[in-house]
Length: 139
Image 1 (cartoon, rainbow, N blue to C red):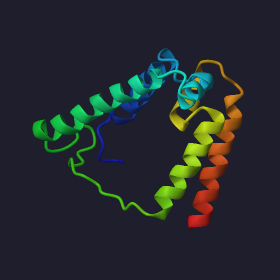
Image 2: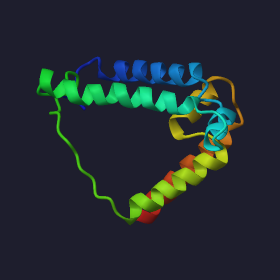
Image 3: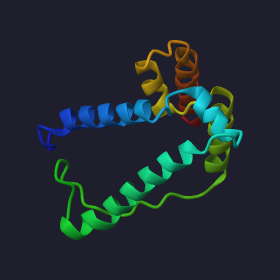
Image 4: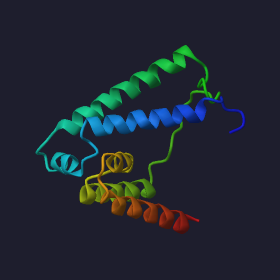
């Protein structure tokens, strides 16, 4: 971490604030909106996800052509392939069930807390317990 640009951490904070504001502004930090999407009643979430995927795709396509390395970390741009195995399927299933039950995913949970949804603390506690148990079992 010592070799990173001094603005790395402040920019991470600003990026997180923009992400959280976007989730709050688009109403995706409200569990009832997400649950309506999962029940095929409201398709607004799909537009938010497509918008994010398009911006990310453009970034992944353009940045390696402009620069050899990330400007703040100096890390080279490269593909990191991960194996598709049983752990991916089990983790995806657990994530999907949790998303369906709570109507919220980890990033949106913090944004939901930021817009005043205090009951989301139960979902956040469940996420932390699940992450701890997964780390304990895998180690």
